[in-house]
Length: 212
Picture 1 (cartoon, rainbow, N blue to C red):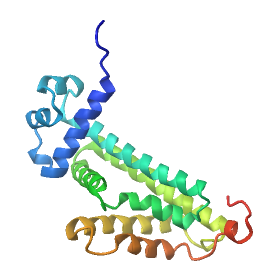
Picture 2 (picture 1 turned 30 degrees about the vertical axis):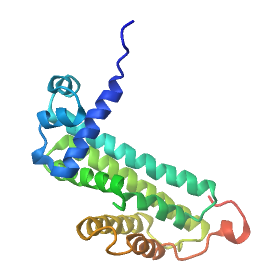
Picture 3 (picture 1 turned 90 degrees about the horizontal axis):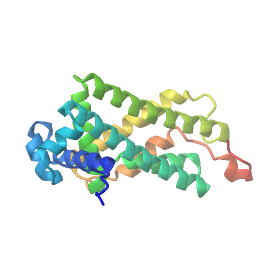
Picture 4 (picture 1 turned 90 degrees about the vertical axis):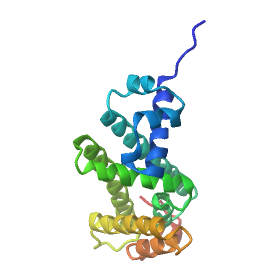
């Protein structure tokens, strides 16, 4: 009986190997021959699944963005299930963007490497805009929910506040990579940034009413 080939597994194996090389050595150092060795496949197999390096870049970027998005969503589901205030849910979920361990450090380097390429690559720019837009929409929605609950002042411009928080996250991530994860309490700094927007107490925790 012929062996069933999992083509999605192969694509993701190749993409993850590319991400590891990109994170470790930078974009210029990655070739199909180096990638084949890292992934444990042939150059021909890589070319079978990815007709060009551009196709590989797009898939690898999508894969990295999807994994990050799922971790953020998992944090949100966990926090909401525990009945945490919106500010705490937001803090826990955005902390997934900080390169505070090996997995998140690799993902940060991959995102930064591919975002740099996106400046001159229309398809990668599309992935970056979509991923950034999804994250902005999420943070904006949490700020709006905080306004409804009383955690956020009713006069706060939610999209503007969301952009300020995300700018803090990006700056902190850059500092962690350049200075080291133990050089300063990045999560505490992020908590302060979130706290400048979420200044009130959630009505759900004051009177046990639903927070919508």
